[in-house]
Image (spheres, rainbow, N blue to C red):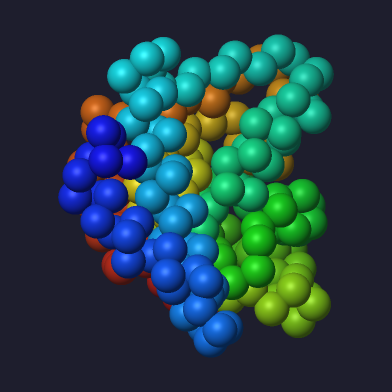
Length: 197
């Protein structure tokens, strides 16, 4: 960590004792901070060596598509933020069940009533069983599909999350150079979107 980023190494010095604390809330916070630091270090190393993740998914490779996003979702330490105008109940059972406990889930989708009538009851049932906090907002200004992880990474999906790999090939692309602008744009869109749940 010292070789990668001396300032971040100091953060690690503070986080490790928290992770070894006898107080549960400090231990949870310490592990969360360490996961975020390790993720940032891994991300930086990948950019220096092989570049951002770009993964083509062939037609009919539904599990391969799901598995790529499952790995990203499972690694989230504080938040997952999905942007997809076509969310449905199947999306909830497929993807939200991959989110670890205590991670905030935000969903930004289309205001189309038929889709919301499907997804909102599924989310309420998911929350009752899993306990994760889920916030849902809608905006008519959506077109593409994105997954933001821990306010630090973003991945674009060429297909809707519910359809990835079913009917045609697609690509999962990590966006690196435009991340700050995209994060700001979708944070602003989230703020102005209609609260659904």
